[in-house]
Amino acid sequence: MRTSIRNKTLGNLPVPSSKKKTSLSKVKVAKLALSIFLIFVSYGLRAHGDEHPGPNGGAIRMPGSFHTELIVLKEGFKIYLLDVSFQNPITKESSLQAKLIDGKKEQKLECQAHPDHFFCPSSKIPTSGKLILQASRAKLKGAEVVYELPLPKK
Image 1 (cartoon, one colour):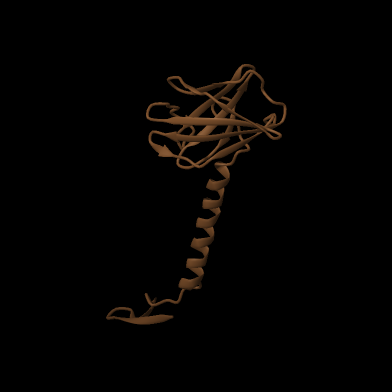
Image 2: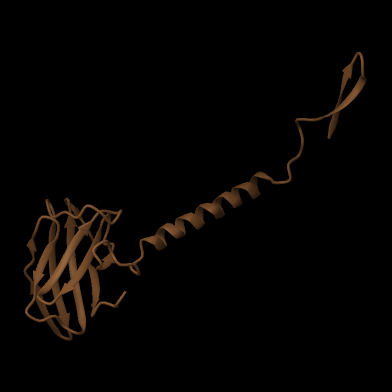
């Protein structure tokens, strides 16, 4: 759409109007913005998945606003309580309860706090079963997390 400007020397000059119609309506722009937003959100959720090893090489779970990282050793289980960025393992103002379930047998483990992790000794590491953790990190309680044993090789 064009409008004219009157100029003494040149006469009427056609110039583009500022009331030009755009090819994208507000609805289309909103749909596009929402689509882009959902792509980034879904990518972020996938990044928190359990498929990647943690910073210490262990298996990751997210029971709430923090992560647990499990490392299976010959003499027991080492558990890190990490922040949402998979960093800063702490045990201060934190707690951990762990139990092993092997078939119908259930064994509660006594876990000791170390400066950056918890260690739960076990005389025998089962070749199948589950390790169930109930953790709180810096007074933030998490949901129960389940690790299937043996852990998959990554």
